[in-house]
Length: 299
Image 1 (cartoon, rainbow, N blue to C red):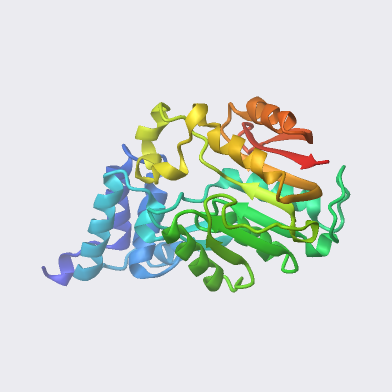
Image 2 (spheres, helix red, strand yellow):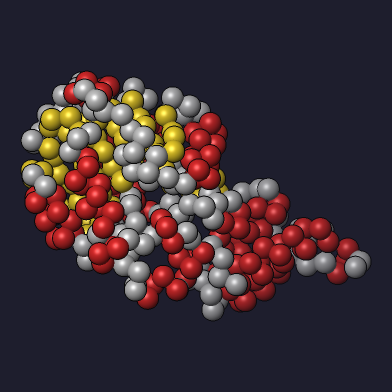
């Protein structure tokens, strides 16, 4: 193919966004993200150099990525990176893609536990040196985002999937957060808390909480994500019930647990916490106004 007839950035983006209109809510942005990845440049570069022609290699690479997106594959899996809490996280099909809704959990933990805040309960340790455990860490997004905001916190993160553990460790290294301890564990199975001094002030988790019959599992990006990280028995509450029950042996007196859940599960999760003896169970809404994070403290 002669280089004179190769399309420009502007032409490629216009064509790709039209093709993506039926599969994406943000077709032009999707096209820009893919093309920026091909050029290994920022989105601003595409605007500045809108009349720049693609090479044959670039056009071929972009078309392959576009075909994957047209088949419904999430952008994050195609480019291998997703931003969360303004941090870049490597992602892979072995883990869930970090979502903005989960930033509600980060905000809530920071609001309740940073040194200038006085919550209704008082963890055993000084607020500048808290111990935190993230269950089912996936990419490590929750644990690493919190560790980035509080370098003195002692943060541990676990996942039962060895591929997820490796990915989270890679993200920790890339973000220079190597002090975060990331290891394989089926929930609490490998977590040691044999004395009160070893217990955690904060336990956080974004566990599987979708019912296996939920129709959303066969729609959109979720189709490509690991079902083991999405689906739980008992109408999506089984893993939450297990975590809440077991966490009592791992939380320090006065410690807090934070759980992400489905938008219709707030009342049920509060009930599970109360039934297990936790106090002050509350539910926080996400940016869309949906119930998203429920938390409580251990007496």
